[in-house]
Image (cartoon, rainbow, N blue to C red; front, side, top):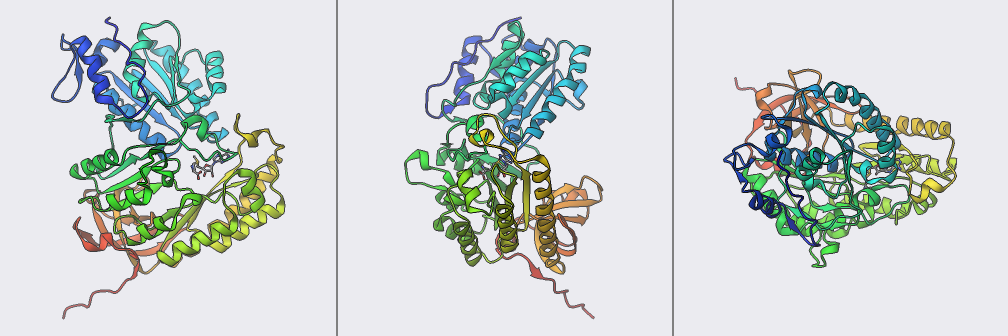
Amino acid sequence: METLPLIPRPAAGALDYRALQAQWAARYGAYRDEQNVWRLPDGRTLAESIFGKPRPAYKILTWGCQMNERDSEILAGQLEEMGMVPAGLLDEADLILLNTCAVRETAEEKVFGTIGYLKVLKQQNPDLILGLCGCMAQEESTIRRIQRYYPHVDLVFGTHNVHQLPQLIERVRREEGMVVDVWQAAEGVVEHLPSRRAGGVKAWVNIIYGCDKYCTFCIVPTTRGRERSRRPEDVIAEVEYLAAEGYKEVTLLGQNVNSYGKDLGTGFDFADLLARLDRVPGIRWIRYTTSHPRDFTDKLIRTIAESDKVTEHFHLPVQSGSNAVLRWMNRRYTREYYLRLIEKIREAVPDACITTDIIVGFPKETEEDFRQTLDLVRQVEYDNAFTFIYSPREGTPAARWPQLPREVKQERLERLMEVQYAINLRKNQRLVGQTAVVLIDGPSKKNPRVLSARTRTNKLVLVPGEAAWSGRFARVEITRAQTFTLEGRMLELLPDDAPEIGRHGQFAPYVPAARSA
Ligand code: SAM
């Protein structure tokens, strides 16, 4: 079998994936066919030359946040450019990648469980390549554990060299033993990465990588590195490309999107980016995740209030309602600052839907601290909250502090969920009888005759309807409210350029049309 060269480690700055690939191609006389698949001079695809069979299949299992989902799209894009195809079932795959999350211990244990289970497949098919990537791969403890207890894993690579997947797979075939290639830090932002996006209607777009906030509970700065913004022209070009491809909604991604641009030093910030993307024809809704309360400027609020496309869903992780806990967490804001921020958002965007993340059982959190969290939750009246038990992460400051007993953490989580779920339901019930514009995702998981759709404010609405309406905007009437979902009935499908799609305050009382005699 031929061996293929490794792409050299890039120098700092923005890098062009296509140029890196062309470097490889020139050396081997490889060319891209009309489907964009790399072929060697003898006509075989790159994947065929590595796996020794035509159209080898891949499966990617993804845990964690949207950033990981997006990385999986990029991994899949690279594999398809090599000539691989998606596998239906796990046991049909020639390559299985586990794209992992390190934010909480529970997620990590699920991954180890899956690796153990996959040993059976590896025994049945010794040619199977099993790889582990994502945030867990950036942790030394994971690498040690894999090397020691899971020698059937062939490849471990991290979040900073995702763009080297073809070369890493080739190394697995060429080298003896497990290939471990994890970079300590990113060496620049890589542009023009291939990707395989599902659906054709909603797309994720990375705008900033990494996080510089160093919350004392959080592993992200270790696993994702320092903040690196993409250049505005690269983001704008990607969104324009997506619009031309027929996408209607984009979600801008980053661990901390509203830090966007700080590292570029040009003064062009997240609000400027939103204002610019608001002008891209064809894109109707723009979402973003996650934003940090500290960086949520008045300019950003104003920009969102004035925009048609940036939706009025604000996900603002508060983490705790106690100033003492916020200080230990290094969140860099106080309860009073946060409450004032919510007030300003509601003044500027009256129909704002506000959601949050909350951690309970942080080291040193007293019953009084926790009550302040409950009090803040009642005061803000979140539309929804993602609630977590604090999970110590090796290498983070809070993991070294005395921990609260498991039962205390569990009991606080349950009390918090009870309070928040009642608010969820109450707020959803207020929407019954109103109409809303939704973007239809497609048939729901439980019932193919019921469609799953989202409002601008990201509320999930289940509407009886036809699969053919997937990807269409529609006006629905909300007929029933539950804690996490709304039910509705279809009033009308909307053309993609209907003005109400771009209107804030899309919930309006339902007024039946007068019946003609
Ligand atoms: N970068 C975002 C921020 O700082 O707000 C959030 C990203 S994090 C992946 C998503 C959520 O997981 C956090 O907002 C936090 O509530 C939760 N989380 C992070 N580290 C955690 C830990 N060690 N234990 C429990 N929950 C944690």
